Length: 432
Image (cartoon, rainbow, N blue to C red; front, side):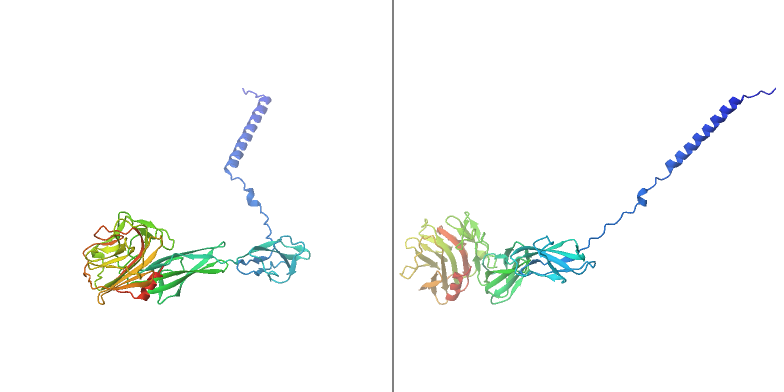
């Protein structure tokens, strides 16, 4: 027997089935939406480019040493070919100069300093471009150029220079202003360099500095190349031998650095207490004759009757000093003593003043000469001889073997193994 299903039941079942199908479709659509890439709306937006400004191209003078500088420009190719400009005033709506030219310069000379040109191009009648501007810096001041101190040496020279300018230094150049030979620079375009000379003599070098505007200025340095000295102590901060022979002096009892005769600090030594020693192995043979020269300044009488400026066991070899009783030079050669006590001989006072002396000994002529402040003051017969090979220390500021010491200051000590003539000694007196 068949059972009859109520109509209401069938309608409810159909409704449930329809709803289930909709849910499945919605779920499928949702999954598809999640797995699909999101649309890129930026790909569809095209920005509108900003229009390039229409204006002339201006070329400025920059830093110049010309009071009538020149500006030039090129057209934007979008105008009428008419331009207007002003100097040092950005408001071009009145009083501006109009021109069809592509350059301009001031009507009258500019003052030193900064000046600005303001420029526009006409795009159409009454319509002007953006303003462009360009600067000129007028620099008429030469750079301040300085070099290092004058020097004497038997070796290469390390020289330094510098320059200053508000607008900067563009270049340096070393050159020989005067001199008997050729100079060789390690770098002639550097403010600090090394220079050597092929010939002894007096040289004047020139350092020229040029600033960014083209102004130039020069300073000079005097150098003396002397390779004939066997020993030379400039005492510029040390007791090294500047002759190039390598005979450095060794300090003892702490000699003190002081100012030299030209006012340079750390360029001379006080030897009241301290002194210097050169061992026998570093001393030259002076037996054929010599010249010894130096600058000295006495400070006091000291404790020794014989104030030895330089000596190599003066009792048997040689020594040069001051007799504090007579205030005059006292020289010992080969164990024989010579006093310079005539009215023509110099008196070396304690006057707080630098003085130059030079002593020459000529073994073949048997003469002894004394020069004071560049001039010959005394000449004596000297039959003594010197041994060819020193066996005692050479003392500077004190005898190398005995206690006799000099109470004062010393600078620029030269020792030659030959007799210098009066002209050469005069040149020593005037050396830097």
